[in-house]
Every structure is written in C-alpha cells, then in structure tokens.
Length: 301
Length: 271
Image (tube, rainbow over all chains, first blue to last red; front, top):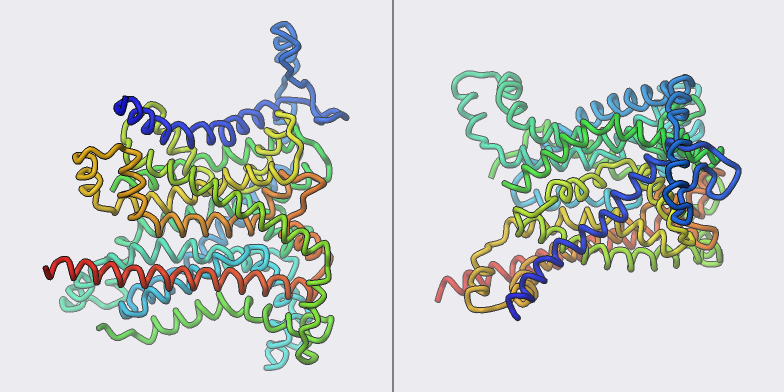
C-alpha cells in the first residue's frame, strides 16, 4: 500500500506540471501551426476551416483539403514582412552588442568589488528588473522627447541649440532595449566573472603581461559562457519585442512583434499572424535550442 | 580586501546612474504641480488623489492584484513540482520534451505566447477574461519558479533526504518535512518573481483578456499611447514603491535567516 502511494507521489510530481505544459504550451503551438494554414473569414473565429468533432472523419478530411500554404506564400511576396524580420534581427543584434558593451564593465566592476558590498550591488542590479517593464520604458519617453529632460540638459550646458530628435527613432529603440535588458546581461556575466580565479591575472601581470592583453587573453575567454548566456537572454526576446518599438520607435521602426500585434489586433487577420508567429519561431529555433542546451547543462552541473 | 580600481568604480557608478536615473526622474515628476510632465512647477500630491479617484484605474489595479495572487500561487506549486521532477528524476519518458517546455517560455517572445494561448482559448470555447489571463500567467510564470527552485534543489545536501527515506519516511513526508523547509526561501522568491511578472505583463494579458477584464498594464498602456501624464507617473511610483519595499523586505529576511542558519551550524559544530 505505502509502496503504491510512494509510486503515485513520484508519478504525480512529474505528471501534474507535465500535463499543464502540454495543454498550455504544446497544444497552443499546434493550434497556431494549424491556423497558419487556414484562410481568413468574416466569422467568429475569423478563419476557415473550423475543425469540429461533429463533422466526423469525412468532414475532417474535407477540412484538411482546405488547408494551404497561401499565408506563407503571401508572407514571402509582401516585402513588409521580410523587411520586418530582417530589421528585427538587425535591431536585436545591434542592441544586444550595445548591451554587452555596457554590461561587461559593470559586471566586471561588480565582480572585482569588495566581497562585503557585492550582495548589495547585485540587489541593485536586480531591483529594476522587478519593477514594471512598461513603466521603465515609459520613463524614457519623458527623457527623450524634444522638450524632454535630455534636451533640456544638453541645451542648458550649451552643447546643442536645437533639440535632438531621438524619440520615435531607432536610436530610442536601442536605448530602450539596452536599458530594459541590461540586468539580463549583467547577471550571467557577473556570475562567471565572480567565479574566476584572480591569481591567473596576477600571474600574467607578474610575468610582464600588460593588463589589457591579460584581459583579452585570460579574462575574456574565461567569461565566454557568461557572454553567450547574456547574449541569448537579451537577443531572443528582443527579436519579438513589442512594447519598446511601439512606445519609443517611430512609424519607420519595423519590428516583427509590432507587425504581428497590428496584424492581429487591428487587421484581425488571424491566419496571417499565426504564420508570422511560426516563421518567427523558426528564426529563433536555433538560438533557443542553444539556450536550452546551456540551461540543461548548467542544471546538470 | 582588494582595492577597487578607478575604472571599476566609474563603470559601476555610471551603470547604476543609467539604471536608476530614469526611474528617479519619473518618481520626482509624479509630485509635480504642473500637468506638463517635463516642466517643474512646485510640489504637489494632487496626482495621487486623481489616481485614487480614477475608478477605471482602481478597478484595473484590483483585477491585476487578483490575477497576480492566484497565478503566482498556482505557478509556485506547479513550478516547484516541475523543479522536483527535473532534479530528482533524471530518467523518465519524455524528459527532454519536458525540460524543453520548461525552459522555452523563459526566452520565447511574449507575442507568440500570447497569440498561441488566445488561439487555444478560442478553440476550446472559453470566455476570455479573468480566468484566461490567470491561466496564461500561470503558464508563463511557472517556468521562472522552476528555474529559481531548481537551482536551490541542486545545491541542497541530498543526504538529509536520503536519511529521512532510510528511516522510513514516505516521499511525500520527506518532501514536506525535510525538502520543503530547506528550499522554502527559493519557493518564496519564486512566488514573488511570479507575482511581479504577472503584475508586469502587458502583451500576454492583452491577447488573452476579454471585454470584462482590463489589467493595470493594459490601462497604463492605453493611456501612455495618448501621451505622458503625471497621473501615470503617480501610478508608476506607487507600483515601484510596492515592489521595492517587497524586494528589500524579502532580502533582509533571507539575510537574517542566513545569519541564523550559520549561527545554528556553528553551534552544532561547537558541541
């Protein structure tokens, strides 16, 4: 009896979250895939064919026959979508590199700080991450506006005469992404840099290696796992980012998350937005797989 | 004790200035008398009164809190179970798929999660509203709970679990009386993370909500699109204050617990 209940407990530990994820993660994915092959219709739900158990097998096969690749062909024909994918990847790549450039010195400084203040520094990096993403993006509107704080400041100290136009440009999007995702870059970098054996650098210095060379030949290569983790943690969600390009970017800022949102909410074209989502997933599947591999490996160690 | 170089101090100072200045400006200007957000016209708390009297905002806040509490609690249970499954059972059928499903939502763009869940709810014929947002948030946040709890489970000393089992405790009893107390801080921070993520989410809530349920981020977003207002600054300040207080209290508590634990350990060794 107890043996049975023990086995049951072990089973349930696995089964409950497993079933939840199957229903709310796996099944929705297949529904998206299915709808991406459907046609738009003026109905509720706004697509055809709608599968229904009451149709029986014959109806099922009829419906299968109606599925087509039309939405995907449409995506390749309309330059808007291809440009949106390319521009999303470019914006994500540039801003991830910028985040790395800005995040690395911070993580390095934190890892070299006295051990007594490191937990406080760590908490200060994490704290903004806990405050609302939307609010943090919103805060930048008041800074970057033509009559905003940045222009007021620059005009007050006499660097510029006319206000800079930053809001509603790609530059504002870069700033917003770097700002919002900086903790995601700093944390993995910090954790690899902190574990590093500092005596290696001292040894290099003793042997006459200049600090900069020591950094490039020892510190940086050793911190590569952190660099890769940080890069993926910033890059992948950024490609599909919606809030930042929508609030800080302009009409010329093309990003696929925004395109999908408008396609769905404004144009109410569910099949095309499903196809957009599937392609976005295909674009991201390699970086996501690398990320998962790294996660699973880290968990095993 | 190592001395910090000037470069390191500058990097940290500039980094933190960059991280905190925007939020600081937002908070300061929520106390601005003027309706113009970027021009200072004297101290005032009138925007907080406006927020208090804004029924739409208060309703949205209430929906958000209810969704957050429920979603975070269920997500913590599911996420802890998933972490247990991943760390304690190294071999079971479909483990690769399972770990894939746990880690994927961490980096998956919100628009995809939101769209796919909406299509699920439509296909299943659910009425969209409070419950669909909650279910969507459970799915998203449980994965974050899993990662937090998993790292604690991996670092804990398993021999005490084995000892309990050897002495005849059932797995359930071992979990409740031995494992859970050890991982409790991670479970609590997992819950807090889930709660704040739910509080914060705009994209998924927007996809999965119906006409009846508007969350605070959805409300803020629709107002922000019309322009920056001091009222939104006031709401944001309240949210930031709540979250900051929560995080600081939690970190002080864990620190105190850590100190206590160390003291206990030293006492145990001294005997």
